[in-house]
Amino acid sequence: MLNRLSGILPNASEHGPMVDHMLEFCHWFMLVLFVGWTTYFLFAIWRFHKSRNPKADYHGVRSHASTHLEASVVLIEAVLLLGFALPLWGRRVTEFPVTGDRLEVRCIGYQFGWDFHYPGLDGKFGKQGVGFINSSNPLGIDPNDPAGRDDFWSKDLHLINHKPTVVRVSSRDVIHGLALHQMRIQQDAMPGMEIPQWFRPIKTGTWEIICAQLCGVGHSAMRATYTVEEQKEFDQFQKDQLDLRGANTAPAAPTVAPPAPAPGVQPQ
Image (tube, rainbow, N blue to C red):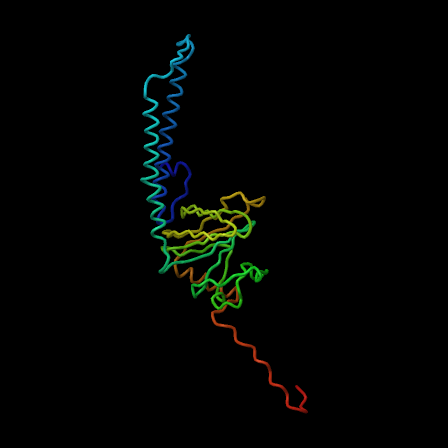
């Protein structure tokens, strides 16, 4: 309830309830602290007003109430760390889908947009190199690598409902931040690094991607959308993108030179 009142967007990922539970616990804890310390502040103003204490007391506080309060705050913070944060982090590490049926996407941030690189039908990313980058190949996919012939890319992210998803986040220039709020995922995009993040969507829909790091004058316009859809819709999206890019899954046929004309015969 408190999460909804504070404006947190609805969850659409499998691990989201654990994140939301921890956030709600933090909100209630901070609300109790706010009310408690505000009450104490008002009490101190009333209790130690100069009309009640015309002469200063230089001995200070003699009770141990403040010590007990501070110890309680430390204890609750330890519960947050040991009871919520570390178990959640542990599950994210131990359950990482290294193998098996999963969707894998590369996310490349740049000033000021996103490119999402898909491995195509073979599930293998093609090799990349800066020398191959041009207007029709912004990701620099090696055209001579068979694994890259069916690769494609999109300005928007498409995901499959209920399928483990690995998004490998990187940057082409400065630090960006990939924020998928409904998936409870946020990861900085670091130049020269590729950082994997994983989650499992549990709800279909289309939402907004924002950059979570101030990356320049066009930061506010660095937006895209991501869509969680069923397998059938994703297959159609993949087919449309392959048709659009003119990708093919078979090696290119070798060029055959025409036969040389016989001596004394003029070529037609």
